[in-house]
Length: 114
Image 1: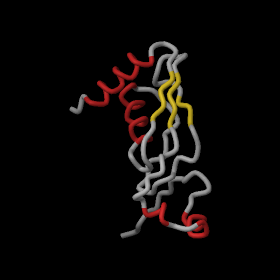
Image 2: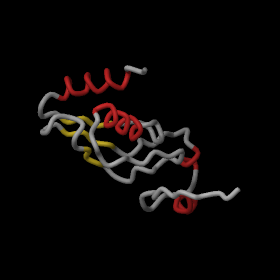
Image 3: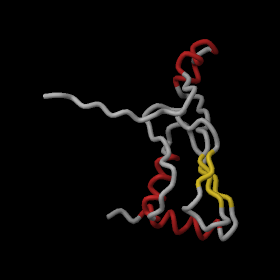
Image 4: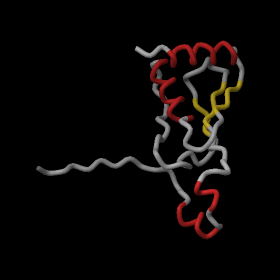
């Protein structure tokens, strides 16, 4: 059993204290939302499940996540920081508009018949 998420959660709570702000910041597609989902799972709380996708840029704004930290402490999921070596950074404005996500991804399930 991996104890790392519990250690991260414990350290985060200790550093945040009863009223602190915790901002999860990193490059696009670095796993910020996945980390928050894992912390919520380890804490055993029901929070809005954040989108996890192989496509960068699925978090469209700053999201406040309640329930993981003490009541007056605040946890935020943020947009990914732009990285100069990403392929999307080499696109011109028109090309960026063609590949940019404009709304939150909705999960879909498909059944395949035998």
